[in-house]
Every structure is written in structure tokens, then in C-alpha cells.
Length: 219
Image 1 (cartoon, rainbow, N blue to C red):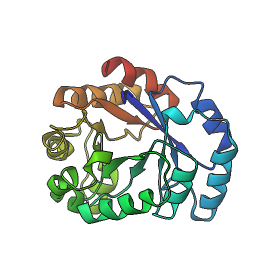
Image 2: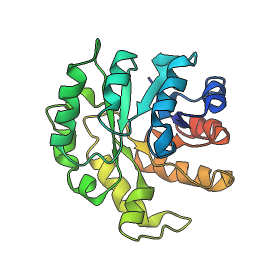
Image 3: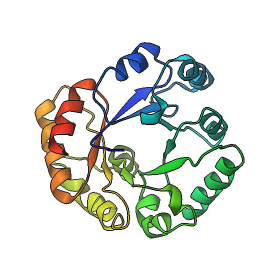
Image 4: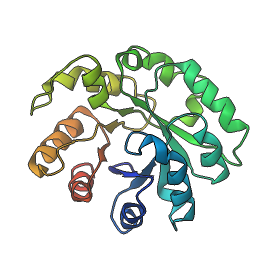
């Protein structure tokens, strides 16, 4: 599977989910986490279950470990794990998945805290590493947690990007963080070019207009 463009879609918005599968994203991530209101998490699972989707190109961004039963029973091939911070966290997820899954469920850790950054070595070498094909960076929550203001050239997150690259030598090229100003396509393109030059293999996308740009740059 390619990861040039990874489109995140709110799990409770049926129209957006259906549209996502008419687009050219390499991977679609149906979200149960931050884009879904707290009182609509279970509703989102019902929407996802009832939509006709291509599970072969669909991962789920879980909100908490209780979502793993849904992921495994519905046979989604993988999850994005928000705020991955330790090998112990991954090993607990691994055990839980084993109790439900019929086939191996991959894990893409999202590194979006300083604790996650400092634990990259143990995360990439954990007992659950056979589930991990690549790492992903979530710079926005990371920057917010340390009161870091990121400028247009994103130089403030260069060090975090480099650490992700450094710990991906035995994995596929990692996935770069999303670009929140989806109306600024020039800014998105620049962000992709920076990430590509550093060694990333794809970009998290939050809007359809970002997909073709990301596919072209990371091809």
C-alpha cells in the first residue's frame, strides 16, 4: 500500500465518507478521535459500519482502546494510534487486538507529544513492532503542548521531523503531519516539498484539494 496521500475523514459525517472513496487518496482514515464530538463516537461507528467502503484502503484512527473491538471485528487492516508515547502502550494494544482480530491489524503510531518524541526508540523497537509499517508525525498537538508557534516555513518542527526520519530506518518512509490551512494550497505544496526532501513518504491530508498535490510530490 502507498501512503503518498492519507485522507482523514470524520467518522460521523456520512456524506464526507462516501465522497472520500471517489477521490484519489492512497489511504483513507475514518476518524473516531478529535474530529468527532464526544457524544457522537458510537454514532460514528454505526455510520462507518453501514457505509459501503473499501476496507482494503481504510484505516481507523481510534479514540480509545474500546474502539479496537470494532476495528478487529469489522476487519479493518489497520489503525492510527493517537498520542503514541511508549512501548507499553503499544503492547497493551497488541494484546487487545489479539483477543478480537481474525487477521493481523497494523498500527501506525502518531507521535504528537514530547513524551512520544523521547520514546521513539522504544516505540520503533517494541515487541509490537511487527504491526508497525511506518511512523507518523502529528505536529499540531505537539506544538500546542509546548506553546510553540510554528511559522510559515515550519522551521520550528524541523527537529521533530528529523527525529521521526532517524527512527524510521527499518520502516517505510514516515507520514508527515497535516497542514491545517486547507485553503492555502501553495503553503501545503511547500510543506510537502520540505517533508519530501527530508525523507517522508507522504502527507496527512484534511481536504480533497490536497490529495493530488501530495500524490504528485511524493510519487
